[in-house]
Length: 246
Image (spheres, helix red, strand yellow):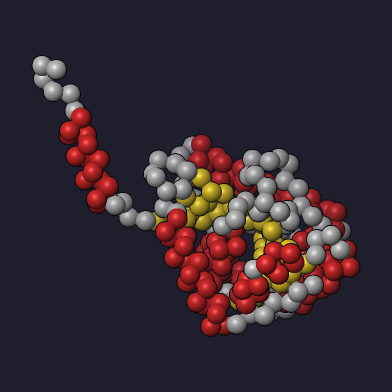
């Protein structure tokens, strides 16, 4: 297991870097339940279990936890990836060998030890790899449920992430934060509950997109329309409009 080597100054700088990259690449970030998660995190340690949708996920959670929620956040990461990208360890990532059960047990104990105080959050991409958001049923590895069993003071929160193109040139990010899950001492039942809860939140995002109804989501970031692009579209429309007699 590779422990985190988190540094406060580097975390703040890198979170700002992540924010700038997200703002350049995406038109909006819509989040459901962000205020409720902030309230819970202020009172209890939080274990977040989520799907793993894309390469952008680590930058997204760094932006959400540091720049939006302002909590002391950590995340579990594949040790191979952390060795290749060691700077993630400086912002709170700790590495686990997904093929080594003993190393997994050490990482579970490490995560549980982190979850010992209010304002502390550990994020686990419980699928262990990137999986398309339409895959059903949602399947998790057992580690997140084991952390939930061992970290008795932590609140387990299911989260769904989706990236989607729509009616604007840039894609948007959708994050649905679910209700806290009850304590579960049985790892099998705990994993099933986490899978079901994250699946529900993915379905919630899907329904919101199909119905074009984002009333339950808060835009924590939304890029203003480009005036130059609007002018260009109007100019092209004027130049190509049908003329009388043609």
